[in-house]
Image (cartoon, rainbow, N blue to C red):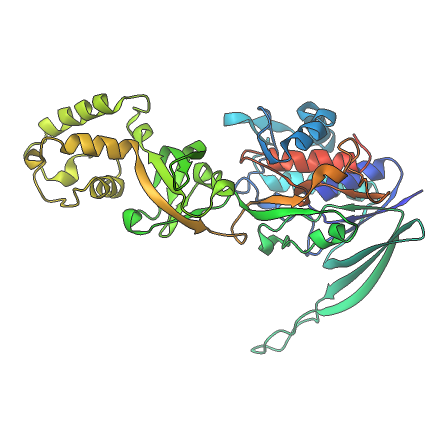
Length: 422
């Protein structure tokens, strides 16, 4: 019976552990957090968006992701969860959740199956170094042991770091990327693979909020809109576009539609927000939209400009659109607007521009773009082409996907393959 060590007890690591244990391997999982599957429990706002039934939406090495998912496709992943005792349900845009709509039930089922199969999970244990030795591997780690209760009013002592050493015939590195370090993924695991000659594709935050010029969005914090979002470079060239919900913050824009633009952001970008969907007129031409606004304006001639969008937009959003169009004076009569005003306002509804100043960063990112280059891994097994017996799975690799369950789907599929298949 072979000894397999798995670095990381997230979705990929636990899938690998279950797959390998089913084949009679002796499995130990090393996890730096206090519990396994910490991120899975909070994904999808706690509802557990596990998979997606739609067309794959991956970046980085999308071809590698396609090869992995050809071997462990959506149907097999559904079967995997059904065998774990997790019934699934599908919601909008192909998003697949536990039927209970609680990510915690999937966490519990994965932990239960691992226990049934005899998987040993060592928490509070961070791998520091991984080396090949004698046809196998040696892992040097540190276990963080709490020092116990402290006297009331006194500052708690930091945990004691106890050196640990593990030996294995095979190792699966599934320790995640650099996103969401509060959940234990700070990018330190990349060195475990680069030490064997694997290259690291430059990493950056993905699926995180965009930081923008604050002046145009002043007073909009907390407001949600349905919009088409287009990201363009300083020359106006299209970088990417999305559609859906955007959430304004004091310093920028988040929400799924905005967050999915993060991986394309660079210096000088501008975010263009088309707000016609808020009026249920997303297909309306600019001239037709102007005529529609003219009809509204004609019926409100004596009212202040602040009432132009009443019934269409939240007041805060309406004020921001008018200010961006060059009409910040909310008290002036609608009937006093110059002839071209409604044309300008209609154009601003179709293109509300915001200069992008950066990203919220890895602390708030859901996923890492970039990672360990996939060229030196076999997509059929996830085994390294540079070191026999060494495997990698999940977000540590240069694969990331859109919101909607794609990232977890790749994590589970690659983990199952790295553990020996399903």
